[in-house]
Length: 114
Length: 115
Image 1 (cartoon, rainbow over the protein chains, first blue to last red):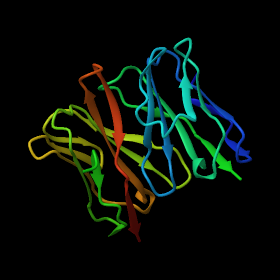
Image 2: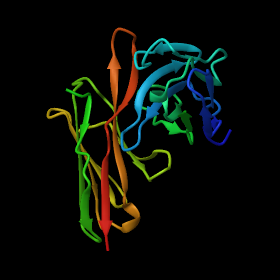
Image 3: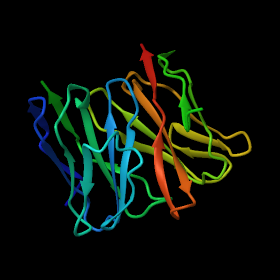
Image 4: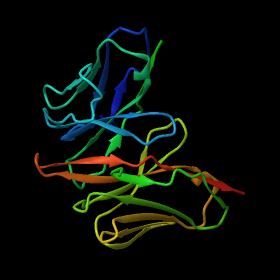
């Protein structure tokens, strides 16, 4: 596609529910990142994929968070048993390859846990 | 020490002045550095990248890199009110154990250009 596409744009869920956030990267982009961004802060690294391999998940806050990219394209970030502290903007970004290629960001998913 | 540090600001400059935004990083092995601009409520957008020591100019923007001091900066000449945004510094951190890089962002500096 023309850009990184994320869905849904907004998600409101009740505490304890599971949510799945989707990212469709730019076609041909090998690297895919998930970030979380709180208001007034920079994007906080969550996890990184190289093709379908999840090379780094050190930023995932706890085991309620997981991510996959089974065919090396679309990725899903899943949060189980959501808590109010999970409320944030979740951003996906992709690039041609890790290292020197700049990231292109999607519009993000605003998650609100009530 | 955070991996990428920026002064949160706000940095207030008059229209037409030079705005200077600074960033320091902890990983001495980092090789690529990026500046993103983020307007309120929008996604970050790439402004410049720099890989080599020295200056790199693009229009009104100049990125400066000093690897020995682990310091990267962004200068905006002839600042305009439309430049008012948060500027994010991002550094590629090399993860040697895994043989890959990951892009780490600073908290951002809020710039306000007043007429």
